[in-house]
Structures are given as structure tokens and as C-alpha cells.
Image (cartoon, rainbow, N blue to C red; front, top):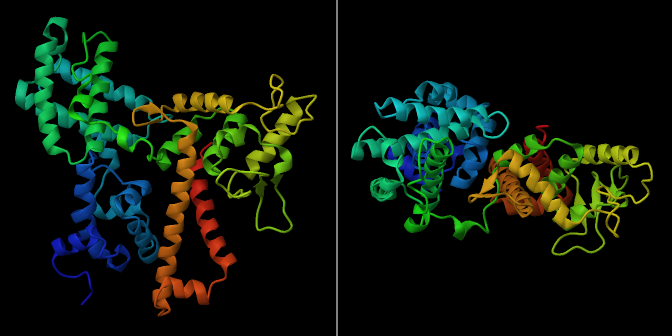
Length: 430
């Protein structure tokens, strides 16, 4: 008997606890496992599982990165194809489901207008999956509100004198959300969506105040505790990449996110640091004389073409260009821009992309955090692949395979190839 055959609930428990690998399952068992594990988890996190294809980063965050690997390596299909053709997920159905659990015409009109505004921006700023997520969260709020207080969500917020009553009403809804949603982070996301709708009402003159303003702090629905460890998702980095408008902005983002440099290192990048066509190395790299908590050499796994373009452009644009800096400046004694300027220019891109972490516009340090998270993920993916190779060859463990059969350079190149592919999927969106 296959180790995963038997009771679907037992299979779900084994998958959740990590005692069963997705790569051990037959295709039919993958379907059962997805429905039993991924489907309800999406709903818990505020996504509509009937219209949402989970992202790779979401699977990684939930501890199920092996699912995508299993589909690709053992069943010759992608996660998206698996979801849409076999599970029954219909991403296009979200547009048809923009129905709200209220019979009040004015309320429905404002809900749809807010959603349309978000969708209008989806091509350049927010992914369509994000719009569907916002809809799902707000729909849940409306459903609870209507059950408690009736179909009209606008009347209570149109007169400043009604603020206290309106606050009491929304607190009743928040009490139920507190019980329904499992994590503080998820509750915080719901609050931000709800507050965004009320702010839209205020800004368009349909409401006198935002009744949920300040409730996140009162209920403890904040993400402050996780702020220092949060990393941007792949999709957030793609949004930043799409928002760049100049070659200089592209290089700045690549240096921060694809190379993992600090903003001071980015500001002082010099042409002599780059070896783009090495004869004694497997690929291009950057050299640093002294570097805090990092290697003196950084491999350019992605973006050497952007460096070449920038060097050609800056030489052409600056008639007296002799400094060699990739971000030259005539105002500074150093001859290059400052780390503060890097910060400000990055903020311009981030605000244009509307990318936030824990309610605030993303800053350069999060790009470095993204790089470390991405590299850790591809190392784990490479080890999983080696685990499969070891099993196929009857080796006791990956360590045996590494020590006896793989040279260090080969192992390093496997990981670099994975990282190169990962960076290309994120930053090659210009």
C-alpha cells in the first residue's frame, strides 16, 4: 500500500505536520491533499480558494513548497495548471462574484466603486489576486455587519454626531472577526482592507469619519512585533520592478534586491569593482575591499546586462565622466550619490508601486531581507532535489551524497542556478 493511501483526514494531518511529503503522493492523492490542506488554509488566510491560485511564496510561508516541486518533477504540470484544470479553481470567476451580501443599492454601489478603483490599478500596481483578496475580506466584513445591523453600511457614518454609535456597531463586527480569524497578522490584513474602504468613503465625501480608525491598536491587531523580520514577497518585488521607469532605477532595484547590497554599497558602486567577463570564475561578480558582515566578492547571478547598459549610458550622458561611479554626483565630494539619496530614490519607486510592509512604504533594507530569504529558499529546494536523487540511488542521506559524490563547486553551481532562475522570474518584468 502506498504510504499516503487510506483516510483523507489522516493524509491531511500527515501533510500539515510534515510527516508526509507531497512528492510521495500519487496524482489522485495530490488532489485529495490540496482540498484537505491548501484549500481551507487559503480560506483561513482571507483568500477565496475557488478563485485563488496560491503563489510560490505563499506555499513556502505555509511549509508546503514541496507541492510545486512534486507537480513539476513527477507529474509534468505547473501549480496553476493543476489548480485550474484539476482542482477546479477559476481565477476569472472573481469578476462574476463581485456580489455583496446587502440589498442596499447605495452601499453596493460604493463597495463596487471601491473595488473597481483597486482593479483599475491592478495592471501596474496590485496583482489581480490581490484585488480578489481585498474583495473576499471586505465581503466577510459586510456579511457580518448586515447580519448585525442591516443592509445600509453608509447611514451610520454620514453624521459626525453618530460617531459613538457607529464605533459601537463596528466593534461588534470586530468581536466576531476576532473569533473567526486565527492569527493577528490575518486580522491586521482584514482591518487594513476595511479601513481602506471607509477611507475611500471619507475621501469621496460619502462619509464624515472612519469608524474603524484606531481599532487595530485597541484589539491588538498590529504587525509591529513581526516588522523587523518580514520580507517582501516575490509579487511585491515584481511590483517594484514594474514600477521602475529609468535605467538608473532598474539598476538601483537590482543592486538592492537581486544582489542583496546595502544602500551605502549601492551608492558607491564603481566600474572597477565589476568583473563582467571573468576568465577565472564561473560568472560575473562584484568585489569589495572591506565589507561589513558579508563576503568580499558577490556573484552577479542576475543583472550584469543592466550594469553594461548603465555604464554605456552614464558614459554617454556625462561628457566629463571620469569618476567611474555608476551613480555619479557633481554635488558630493565623494563623486557619487549618498546612501540617503539611494533611500529617497527607492522610496519614489516604492510609493509609485504602492508596496507596503506592515502598513508602511517598503524601504531598501527589506530588499536585502528578500535576497536572504530567496537564497535560503533555493538552498532548501536544492536540498530537496538532492534528497530525491539520494533516495533514487539508495543513499542513506543527502549528506552522504554531498560528501562522497558531489564536489563543492558542483553543489554551489546547483544552488546558484536555482537562485539565478528565481531572480529572473522576479526582476525580468521590465
